[in-house]
Length: 166
Image (cartoon, rainbow, N blue to C red):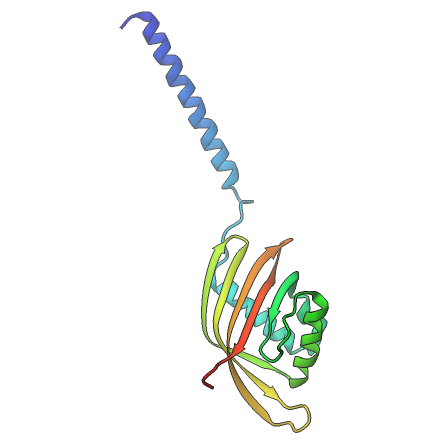
């Protein structure tokens, strides 16, 4: 090899090393402590516990605040699709009169990325008739779609339907 080809080869190796160092630096910067981690399935499943506890307050506004402003609610005991905050409040004002207490029967959680997840399965609610005090249990299928917005997990889509064979 002549001196010129050695110099050219050294320049190529040096340029390649600089690009590699720059790439590693970029990856290290994005993978640092500020880089968001995906939530665990357990963390997502626990969002139901918060929602259920909020039902126990009897405050429709507190429950509706767990939903995103543009959330869609397809509720179990109403034929209306709720697509805004006021509609969701209205639904829960009626539903909470039954003093609902929920319990998951089966849950399947899919964590899609750092800011979105789906929890789907079967739950049951013990409802108390406000006039007679008689309790009944309703089993339903559910799907919660969550998104992390401004650092808080919000329900963006909630579908619930009574089991057809119940």
